[in-house]
Length: 284
Ligand code: CAA
Image (cartoon, rainbow, N blue to C red):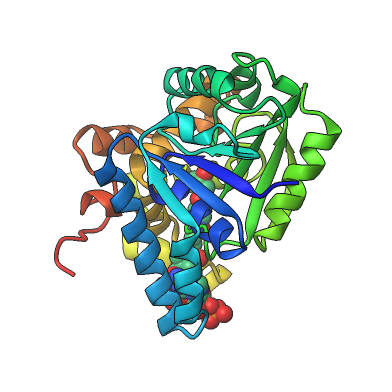
């Protein structure tokens, strides 16, 4: 039975997971590298809750409940009695393995470990712990409070019991869950990333303007955002990172990043968070 949830990495994704879990009654311990980083995560939550209130999707009592269920710390030892620990730290295997090696020694033996990685091997992370059967992927989507999906990812070792408990946990957050294998990109990114890469190639070849590419998919196919706006929203660096991992794994040109994407990332055009990507976000 999950009551207390540890979230390691309280950025955009970690704070989103913390927000929905706290809103559904779980006690959240958020671990960040600095107090400032934790406060930034709390600011994302406050902003999202204020927007939800403005849209009539939540009230002030709910906001207080969410904030009241979250404590922040820089000390991994605070995770000792968590029932589930979900990491959402930087997409770097060395960092993730080090984290799981450390918390494996700290957390109670029955605790379940989850990673919110979008493309790295969950099995490789599980292998550094003494609890590979209690390890799986819980891949949420950005913005977590709004996007309905969670991919629940099974490794070769994940036990049925762990899978069922984690699946029910994600459902208790109001998410619709799909079951995915531990293969790069799981379900959604295997389909989404080549589509975004194709849109970038189309723009790079000068076949249409960025606005027309985006409007084409929004107005012609009912997508809430066009592919170039969505790439800005997710982060060009993130898309490049995922594409490179999938290309490395599958050796399939579907996942090959275009020169333009790589050039933009190298020049710091990382999308909305950087203030510039395919569009300029500094003027608004
Ligand atoms: N809390 C709760 N509900 C909220 C909310 C909040 N903070 N903010 C908005 N909402 C609700 C609104 O009330 C509205 O609900 P209804 O449809 O019932 O009216 C709905 O959410 C949409 O809100 P808005 O129309 O105001 O839209 P927005 O401009 O605020 O947000 C968006 C836009 C939701 C981000 C939308 O553009 C969208 O869905 N974009 C696509 C995002 C996407 O594809 N994400 C996945 C990225 S891939 C990923 O994350 C995985 C990976 O590994 C890379």
